[in-house]
Length: 225
Image (cartoon, rainbow, N blue to C red; front, side):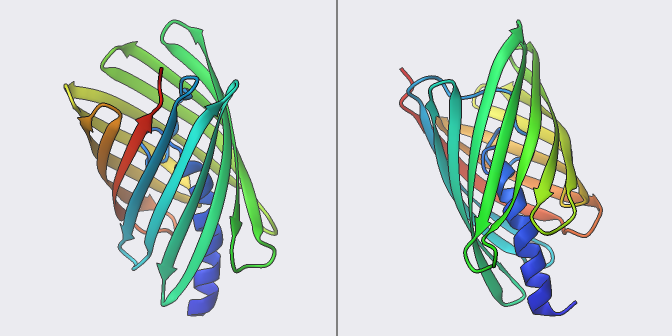
């Protein structure tokens, strides 16, 4: 595959990934939680990903609670093999508590690429589950599918655990499938102040075409009554 063709293919896949990862629990983490912002609350977030095969990605996004759902939007600039691409994503998310400590939800995300034809590249539909057996521990499960425009649909799934090891410090571990690649990720989250967090993680490729990567990100939530 030529470098240009590789860059175009990667850009399409990155766009699908951005449409879901942009609003995952803990920002850049791939596995989302079955929870939405409180009424009147909003968030902004950004991160930088550096992959072992030379891919670089800068993300910026945000969202707010609108009635019964959370709406999120994002933009990403990616560069690989000397080529660059800009993508945009939009996600709607709904979640509810079914039992004490157990919640379920749905996420529908779609994305566009600025310099490809057609610009719309696909959508992702996911079911979300979260179980919190203790105040300091949460388990998440996602089952979904990427619907790629002009290409083969792809399975997307993952499981994650979040543990608050001590006040202000959390450890996140997840195993997930995205872009036909299996990953194992470990991350550390620091709550700097109320509503402001910083995340750092390593995603190790277990199998598949994509590369392992490092990500550094930050998020700010505000407006909660």
